Length: 320
Image 1: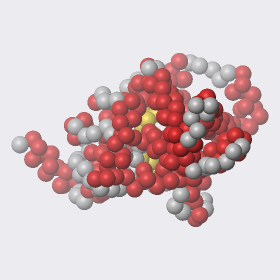
Image 2 (image 1 turned 120 degrees about the vertical axis):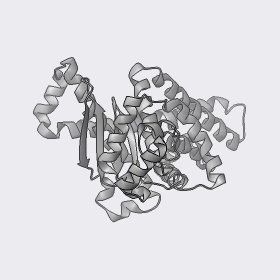
Image 3 (image 1 turned 180 degrees about the vertical axis):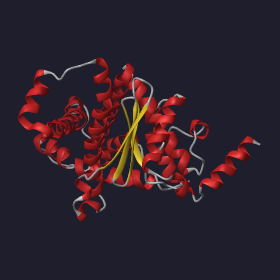
Image 4 (image 1 turned 180 degrees about the horizontal axis):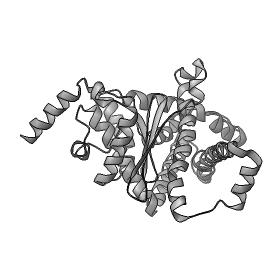
């Protein structure tokens, strides 16, 4: 396995692939054609050198990923809004009038902030209050922290299961599987085509699902050591430690994506297990979209160390 460094995200009827500062969005339009947009993304991490430091880069990359994810998801949804003939609502028209061309970025920023606040409230603060019902029966703070972590994991799994029942989300999960399969195909040294992608794994150590799962596990370890009597301070510490937990989790995921160590692979298994819920086997036309997204920003032939002539020889050998 040779790590490629590329990553991506499933969008509505398509795939976003990112290679360093360049990213592509490939979308299967309602008429069946594949639309591809290639652009540069300069997030927070591209502006300051200190954002590349270990632990800090995890938080920065997480925020950048949310912003880029929202932008590309909105872009892909636009093709289907046009197909449905939907006109902007009153609130959207108000924002356009108020902010002009900046309206979309401002709305995305507000959405990201709201999403983070809701996630912190549901997955970090709420489990603490739920675990409080056990305080009259359990005196061990360590055991209470483990129970709180179990509740947090349960809420996360329940959330994933609930949204996976939605029709549109099921197709997004299929594209998510296509994204992983393409990256695994490249990193295992196989030629990037539908046949090879089809037989590649849909699980990958660097997946966002694995990152969130690791965040849940790391939070249990951190919160065990919070030894304060005030309930208010306990909640404050849980919120203040989130960037640190995210940073540590990112470093583990980053290392796991580059390592073939047996222990690291074992520790990555629970996160990959969660991907059974967030990835599905894609259809061939979805794999085609994923391949187009990859090739728009990443030269896999150069990465694997051979040129077009070598690829042609491989095709002849396979045919024989």
